Image 1 (cartoon, one colour):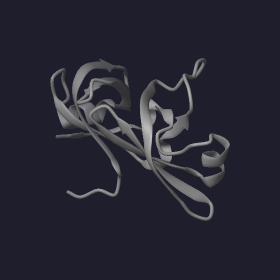
Image 2 (tube, rainbow, N blue to C red):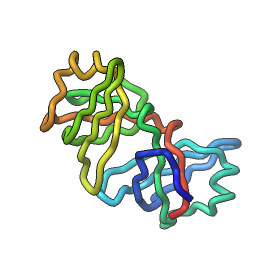
Image 3 (tube, rainbow, N blue to C red):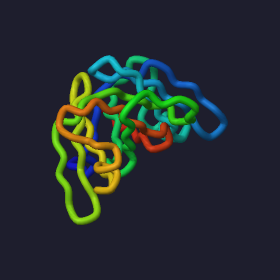
Image 4 (cartoon, rainbow, N blue to C red):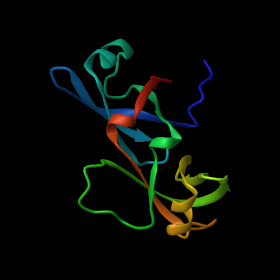
Length: 139
């Protein structure tokens, strides 16, 4: 299956915490970062997820926010440090590629955000991803 989702991060399930309808799934990415996905309990069952399951975390580029330093006081669970490797700007939007340990992420942000954050190749950033915006596929 081919997907249009640019961010496809391989990893291994470390924990599954089930609730009545939803589950929180902990994932250790290939680069060693920890990622959290909040998915339905039905999806956990359908995918057969347990600790040790190989997965691919899928995140649309529009769901990856960028910060230029550590961020405190946020409910966003996923905070992955990286370095900007490429910026492609258009009239209103920009695509920012970020190198992270073990791979890369793409973030779609406004052109204004690139300017306001003074992003350039080599800029250190933190990619912020809400756990509810992480989908999982079995690898």
